[in-house]
Length: 434
Image (cartoon, rainbow, N blue to C red; front, side, top):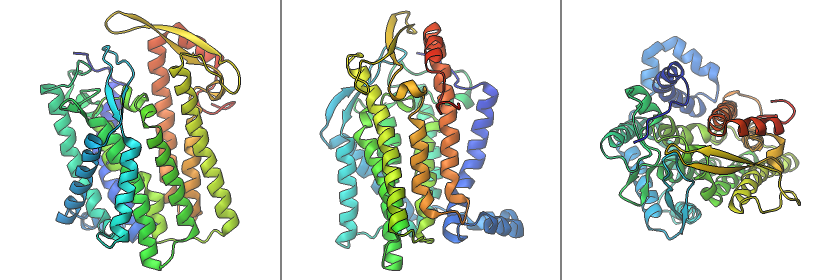
């Protein structure tokens, strides 16, 4: 069994896990309360808490209810069934540090289509009103907070007692093991991949489902949908559609191929994604803004362009890897570095590092259009309140930290070849700046 390598220093890990455990759950509830009940105003929520203290906060934290558990259980069971039962092409993930190659069933786009068609059909034919989800949102988030904590404890115990592969192990520290995870590819049985479920089929899918929910709620409430909500919903759906179209590529990224299944990533996908990532739409439900056709179309076009560039960055690198560098990048042969590295078993292997196209601009240029896309689906809220922009700020911090972690990991993996790569591609994220 492989030992866990801590991604940050123990001190940073302890600070992270304590802040995540103590600050993030109440933040999710405060975000929901402020967006839905305090007019989106941080000052209004602050004044309430200053006046009523801890008891006031306890009073606004809704307890999980039977209906919230039912909604979550039905959604989770439906997505798990689609993941297991829908047909899909068999694809292999990248070779792991222990030399394992995970096998997946690529049916994400089918699951995404079936989910949205089913959800909209339930509403259209009067079987289930998505407004119920919005009306019980606080209780749902509360249930997710506690339920996901129990799920992460299950992952920790499973990693100790029944790991799914040799890509697992303990650091010897219970806090680090719980936070960063014990297993790289945990599975239930042979075919149900837990990280694909938490990251893709529960987390990312909930983003699209909630984006539609907010749009439908505004329609039911006002009898119409504001152009600001339409722009926000369309851009979020375009982004999530791009994600599922490219899901096979996502299985090669840091989230799946390098980060273990612990509290950090699984709680984030099960709770943080549905609550924080969807928050601009949550705000717009009760704050419709009339942008006018011209401004709405400009924001929409800029957002779609950002999402396309983000997709094309990933597609370019994926095609480069798939063809072993024998492809065209922006109409000509790609510039590359052939880097050798040694696996944990002592085997020497080679990788190709792309240094042209989007990947010649900066080492993580794809994060630039991702941050811009988030800004463009938030900006329809305009600037009356700060809170809708929390996700953009959070995403920027997350991606800058991820870029540093990825650079550090690649530096230790490729050594002198990574140094040569950094000399050729000087900037980490923003060309000419950083």
